[in-house]
Structure formats: structure tokens, C-alpha cells
Image: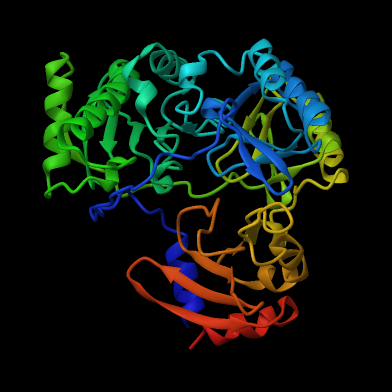
Length: 439
């Protein structure tokens, strides 16, 4: 059955693909930030970059206070572990910037949109992984903010730091660094769409990641290409590896070509529950109320970690099993997902109406109506108000896209498989539409 085939394929990670697609951008990068707000139908929107998804509890409380004072009061998580503030009142830009700067969330105004770094959210908390990532993360963010050239990166350019468990492999980053065992704490580094990587000394990894980004900008400038991502460059096979290796060698970083590992991988979000010294929860549709955010912040020891799967990792080192279970129960009572069997883990959506003028439907309300059917699907669903599919996570899933006629179009996608489509007139009919794409 197609759904079964899709689901089986979705359990395996998608390593960086060898198939690059040439792209030419004919407009400027409109990716929002905190100094460049996006005007939505529900007010202005700010996207706060949170490198590695790591927020101190003081920063988390500051963000919640800002959301309540200037916006809709909620915290909206993104597929890159960042936070969006929505419903911001008109003319609040200067006050917003000052508040974020005061909380340490705007260390370099010139770089605020380019601090896009995802990292293994359970690093150092569950005894897995090869290396604790905090030194890499701190060094990369500092190097980014100190680089005049990096200011020219697109707000869509993405760095990924993987502690060795492989959870970052499927996120489609421009530069991926993965810790590997053996040697003296080595790392693999890959650029864009590549199935080969370079083994380098682990201590060189943050600097190497920035050097690749800066080399990408030089290549774009010299070629006149209108692209934002490394995978959008029209490069012959093997060329990406050659120019990356040459760039590193020019700066004294030795490297050895190596295939990207086939596994093992830990795919997707950390399962809800207690894992090591952390509580893992998911936010339905990536949205947290002020009460949910406060409960998580109060439970955390020192920091919160936002995941690229729109969830939270709440570190609780030293907490007894009974106390951790009680804290998890408190999070569940606020409506956060703590059950690994919850259908919310199979359902995502863009903001839809009324927040987005381009959306054809209130996709979040419709996703809730179809929640039971989605929970029985072996492949995650993502509801989108238009063909842009904003916020859609990478990987195999069923796209549910609002159609001009008021219904939806379902498309089941999986690498190496032809897509199957079906129409949906109403969310109550979702189970039948899912069956229709199953031969």
C-alpha cells in the first residue's frame, strides 16, 4: 500500500541529497526578523532567532512578557527552533528591539536574521551522541556575529550542528557539522546538497562552517547568481566538495573526503516524555500559550531548548524520577503533548486564516477537525493555506493544501516514489481521502 510504503520510507533519514536544483531569485529576501517585521493580517510578525534553540530561563520569561505586552501573548515555534511573535501592535518596532536587546536576544543587529543554527536538542542530556554541542554552538554564533561578510547571508541560510546521533541529517541545512567517533574528536562537514563530506578536526568545526558560508557569498558575488542557499547553486557533481575543501585548505584547515554516514540515525523530534535528564513535549501546531510557556519555564533548570520540530526540551538535571514525573504531569495539564501516541505528533499547519491574507482557509481549525484521522495515518500531515506551504518541515509527509474551490488537495510524497493525490471537500472526510491515496 502506498501509505504503508510512504510511512516505511519516512522512518529513515534523508541525508543531504546529491541532486541540487539551480534557482534564480528575482526579488530580495523578505524573510522576517526582529528589526524587519512582516505585516500579516493579524498584525506585525517578528521572528526571533534562537541559535541552537537555547534560551536561558530569564530570556524565556522576557520573551513571554514581550509577547503579552506587544503581541497576541502566545509564542509560535518554527521549524528551525526559532520563535515568532504575532499580532504585534503598530509602531512597536523600537520598543521590541530594545526589549530583545535587553534580554540578550539581539547581540548584533546587523546579524539578527542570519543567526539560523539548529542543533541536536538533547545533546548532553541523555547520554547519547558523541560530543556535547554547546562549545560549537557558542563559538559559531560568536563567529557569525563577528563576521562583516556574514551580514549578507539570506535569512533562509541554515547551519546544523549534530552531536553524532544523526537527528540533523534530514533538515536540509546549508552547512551541516556532525560529530563522529574516532580520531581526536573529529567532525564531518558537508555543504548544501552533497552525499560526501569532509572529515576535519572537531575544534576547527565552528570556524570551518563560517568559512564555507563566506565562500558561498563570494561565489555568488563573483558569478552573479541570484540564490540564497548553497543547494541552489548550479554546480557540477563533485564541485561543491572541491571548493569547500579548497576554502578550508586556504585557511589552514586540513580535511579528508568521506561519505556521509548511512546511519545510525535518530530521526524526528525527541519522543514526548522523560528522556535522560530532560522533559520532552510538543506544542500543538507549534503554538504555546503564556500559561504553557510559564509552566515549562518554571520546570526548567536554567534553560529551555526549542526543537526544529516545534517542541520543547526542558532540562531537569538532578530531579528525582518522582519529581520529573510530577513536572511532566504539570506540562500535560496545560495542554502540551506528553503522550507519544498523541495524534498531534502527526499534524502540523501554517498559520492560515485569519492571520494570513494569502491563505484560502482556516487550516488550523480544519486540522483540529481532522485530528483523529491524522492520528491513524502512518505518515505525518501538514495543512497549508496555499501552495507556498509556509513552515512545512522537510521530509516525507502528506501535504493538505487549500484549493481555490474551498476544498483541499492531498498529496502523499516520498523520496523515489511518484506522488499520489486526492481531493478533500471537508475535513470530516479526511479518513476517506487518506484511503484514496492508498492503492
